[in-house]
Image (cartoon, rainbow, N blue to C red; front, top):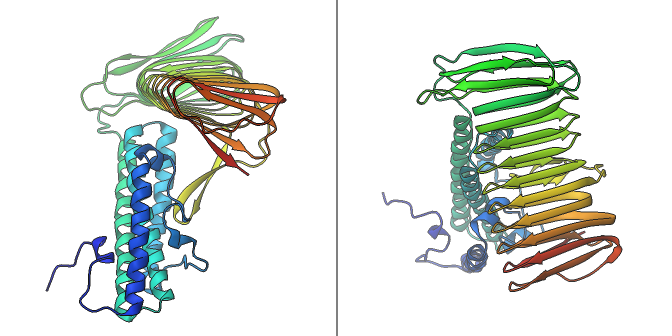
Length: 452
């Protein structure tokens, strides 16, 4: 019994006997493979990670053929259903991992790249099967197309299972042995500041309608929790050093919704939500997620990913090498086995005074309306999907990174972009009285994407 050939090479492997339908199918596959390779080599790994493949002409022209079957053949329905369930589990695990801020950004990018590759393989195999059916290929040729789709399904299913386990593993402590429990609180006088000092672990800071701070959860072995009440400042902090490969701290901190909150952390990942007063957040190596905060926000991280979900009245956010994402609320839906993120409908409140800065991290600013914003990036890429309101101004500067402007065709604001030494592919348009978006780059390129 001979060993089955490589599933990718099997698409174009020569056969001893040819008939006209098989030749037509092979010609379609060869042409599609050439287009796919040429497009993939021109796209960076980051772009592939940020933009999962879609079932259109970008990845494979055959996917745009009218009448292309999306449903799998009957013999592959159970496998396709298993893959769909695995994809749903992966989406849930990914959302949980990102919310807790415990999943490394590089591992996430690598996984998205791999998942994008398997998703493209599924689309390519579906189009191959469609080409075989359209050409009236014989049973053998169609069987090989079905087998190619089966292999693509199996590879994607296996990768989805491994990806889900990896995310779940990243948020699962190594060992919970010896973790001391924490369940304590203190009264917060009116006007007092809640000061939180942390070292590592996963921490959620949530506002509630009480005049006290309450901390519960588990500390890493070797750490202890200290509460210091005061009339002007209430300090809650972790002391000691975690031991070996012990489980990190996992804490929930409830604070008065209207109290000013200051958090300083060494390597903790933070989730902060549901506050009406000013927040001042800083972590050196952890991820940071801020949402549903009405008051002014100051947030910074060096190596982690910083995400702020608005609209916000005033925001100052900065990273050193971590990604920085500021956006309106969004929803995630599954379309043809791939997650698609879209702005939540009905969100029209403008973003206020926004200042975004990064040294080498990627900045993404996605807002339907902006009053005033400054975006500065030195070496990282920047993506602007923001439109100023009438009289509003958005100013973006870059040194060597790529700045991409996503601009609605209906926007009436003035779009003004320039680069000293890089390429510029942004048409000047609009009226300054309706708002102004100005992009200035030193050595970087400036690109333009128009949306409906």
